[in-house]
Length: 419
Picture (spheres, rainbow, N blue to C red):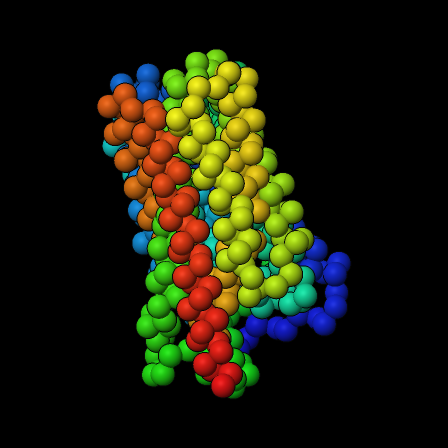
């Protein structure tokens, strides 16, 4: 495939800042739509007479469709370009949120959850393909940090925006507001289409010979990258990341409320506190992460702290006022690991397969997010809120071991290619 992606200027910080800003707004919208239903669970539960497991299934459908679609979206981005795929995704958000607002049955909620999930599918292959192609390499670590921050801000905004409108007006008005917001972001991206450019996968022959040899297994074909063990370990890493995060987002605040007698209004702030602190952690992690070869160490540092806090929430009694503070501490630790996580995956991606690798790896994120709400919802129906937090801690601990293995395998492969 011929490379049609223009090379970024050697040093144009203003252009890079504008590009990061537009991609960040789109990414924040994607994360906002991850939580388009969870903040409305109390209203949906009453309106449709649903159990916790049935509510969790709505998120499961979203993330199953998103995960399957994300693996395919990486190939689509490499073939037709990132910009048209991004525009299509935002249009699906508008359609899906409108459908959810008009739904009159649980079956309709399931259908439009799938539509929104399909819209969410391409975002990581799109975003990382554009940033890797058009951001100066010296600023990629900071770009990844800002990208992660905007995602956390989208997560933080969703409960406030949706639950706030539901309380003031109606849950249907909250979903209609989400549709209007997505339409505004669609207009923003269209207005900056020249800045985003026509980004496709780089041709294999354009990569340095040493890098190609170090990064790709022998054998041609679009699926050659699937023979890299680091790619599959990265998939597993994102799966575990998503299970832990999905537990926090779906039922973490409710489980903490039951364990520590947190008032309802205060419990609603827990996820927002987690996400805002995670954004701060990502900024901190992005600016102190200068060596991609040490990414796994930063991940172990941040997630080690988050795992400890998870166990404290699940196993120790705490005054209710401290619970949002604990959520924030856990979010900051996870945020520190975020930019290093993305650099770790970038090291594992062969030249010419960026979209495919990010699509495959980030489909692990959607797979975990699909299973987490259903599994943790069953725990909640069984009156085991402490089990939710123990499960979150277990999967955070698995992340540390996975990151260390990915770093070891990638370093060994790159050293062998350079020899």
